[in-house]
Image (cartoon, rainbow, N blue to C red; front, side):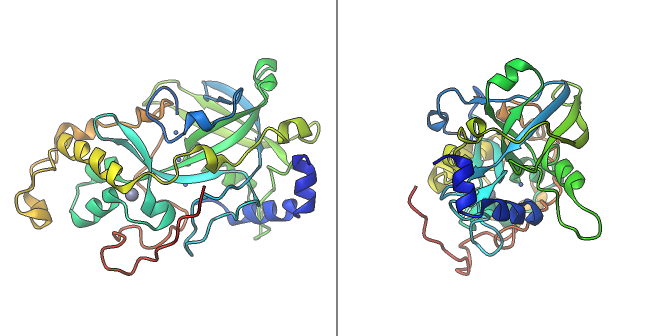
Length: 322
Ligand SMILES: [Zn+2]
């Protein structure tokens, strides 16, 4: 059974509408360390990089797998088998000597995260906080129409900052007077998305002019049938001990590791102007997008400043088998 048939059977259009109206909460890849398990990506599916210039794409929905991030009720933002159009994630970037990105266990699943715990336990200045806080990232399937060559590639995976993609899309998809959102990813009644990227440098780039454009025709089955659960190709549950081990490298680099008297002395620690502020986001292999330190928009499981597991109140959920 093809995607469209399964979609009709499960009332997929309805659940997709619900997802569009619900909005997103907030996530990277290349030769660099990445959140993606590249060997789980089907052969022929490429990662799309947004170059400078004009773009027109279709955002292609997918059936959620068993590892979608949780909402504030600690339930999957989209139940397995239902449709979604975005994998909305919080990611700690540039962790340790290898500058690895990790999907944050706390922000995405309400589980203990050594980095979030450190942030809670220590008084950090703005730059350090910005370096350590989990960044809001988004992953999509795109059918890119920039030219014939891109079009022939079928679906491509695109990972971007929430700030440059989803926030702009949400703004233009919102209907007036509480009318919900345009179901732009609907295979039948959706819209293409057009925008322009200006500036190719890591530090000076902007994405602008986002608009929804009528499609010439519905999304063909051969495109829909290429999709798979996006959560199945991301390392959604990195191991606490591994993050902690790598994070020690970050702390060493930031000269935060050997605090003799513990967190209480954070105020007089001397690292305010240390080189740690130079850590950038290049671990994503893309550009240095605007990973603002602004608290994320999506309501997250539990209080984001509260270290999970420290007071025994954190709801533990059984991890489902993948
Ligand atoms: Zn975290």
